Length: 469
Image (cartoon, rainbow, N blue to C red; front, side, top):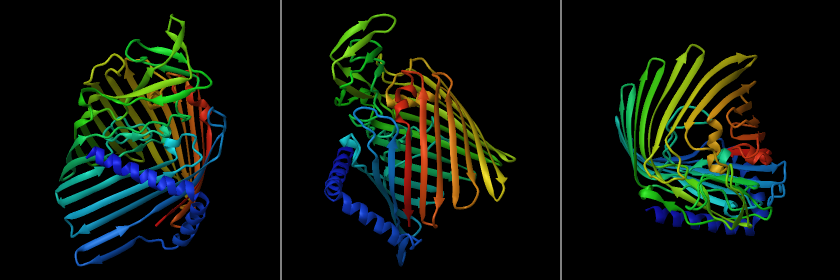
């Protein structure tokens, strides 16, 4: 099933990629016409015949992305990005439902050809429901956990890491069963063959460009610090699957609601949703043996992803206390696969306090959140390890809505362990019920060879125009 889905996805991406590259200008123009033509409809298309009901909608966006600093091989080329989401459903009575969600992105100016055109079906499942029972079979995405920005319990689905700060979930083929109770539920899922994550392209700005700190170089060395050449060329080797990590993944979630309090407990055994991405092969000369083995390497650097099996236990809580909303969760992760360059056991915890208050004619929401990660292994500079910024993280976020049409969001994250900062700010304005425009910026700062410092040349500004119906 996984190989069939990969073939369909490849055809989907390549077919529309050829169309896009050949008719770029015409598609941009057509896209704008579609946005302006449909934005006035304001409602989903739906019809009903006897007990059959169907609906289809669409969310289309056109945006611009500009990196403020040059990072070879990317020379600050402005990027125009088109994205689309098309949700659709078909119902028969109250029992049967077919749910589809198609997504696509086109980014022709991207320096990595792997990232220029992408399409996926995060959701494509059949549902049978006869409350209190619900059964789903097909490609699906699942969200566990309650915290914002960093959620250590969101562990079921692999992700697409073209942009690690905005990674997106990939649908996994699963069987999901849920039993609702009065004030609670029990949910179990089984994934016969988990999908692999999609890593940054070989020319991506989200791969280290100056120094690569890796837990291993191939299997013959321990951790190493590799000084990268200016003429760097990354290559991916075929991924490794340890202990059949992608086979037979399963999980369980139990949730109970009390007056003002929600509690959840989860357990999952399966492939880590983020693989270990380490140096696999280099041609190099050693320049230092102590305190860290240091190499200067030839331009061709080979990376390899290793998928390993883990066992995760965790819990979360949400408490409404007057005007305040308190959120907390914790996860214990123990790898089942054993290899000297894999992460060891990890304990991650997050605690947040949120409050929404009236401010003038609008509202202001404030979030304070702290995170703690207990890990035995040292941090590396792979972009898939950016979650290490939450090992000792403190975040403040503000969302101000002076009116129903205008929203301003800003957040500041301080990595107190590795000494880095991440700042995000954006503003959204609704031109109508179906059309929005947005502008935003992000800034990264950190010491050299730390999770944020490795990518501090990726400061960027963004513009967006979005329409849905």
